[in-house]
Image (cartoon, rainbow, N blue to C red; front, side):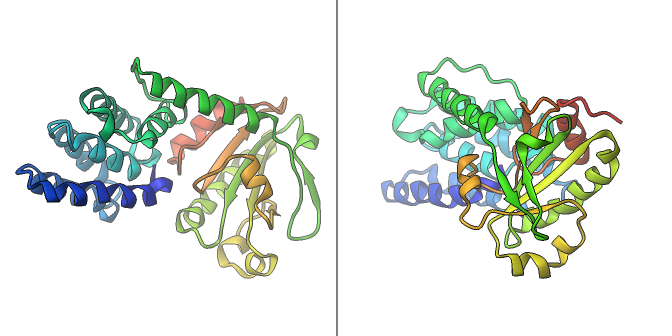
Length: 280
């Protein structure tokens, strides 16, 4: 979940604090942690094998370190790495929770695991009240997103209301020109829009950027779907969006049908659209 990468930086402090304990296993854990943080320097083709290897090694770590390392591995893994990779990372997180003393398991580990299960569509079997609470929080967030509505203007001054788009399939994307993964994703959304608009697909990209910044942005200039303005991030907050890019899918009845975990692959986008009945 690369949108949560900054969280991993914070967790590294745990290992730094433990260094004072002169634990003989600490050097190995810190070296492994550095390998995890370097995953984002690998090519897409090299990442899956590397993540599988790291997951296997994390599961062999002492109980003092496994939760921190599992959290960081999750933080730099995403949908583009494939379902098998996500499942391996989820399994590692489950083992970390089961093996670790409670003081070593941050609440975000439960939240990230619940998100992997819900939005990454992996299997998680964990009888733990903290995990159940994380799932319940996701349920509450999804209920709010399902009920969320907006009326926003695009760069040309046209007004768009989600409730007025019943009968069409709608992708609501939250992004920013200052977010590199968001910029990388925009051509994917444009391709989907061109491919499925005759079947009723509408793409709405919502940004808190200033209109002038959007208007002159090279990436924004290349898309043909509406770019909506949310200057105070009011609707970003209403949709409970933490990391961007983030996309929500609404079906023809206006129901929330699915959402992204981070940036899907081409096949991942098609799988998402299929939840609202769009197929090639």
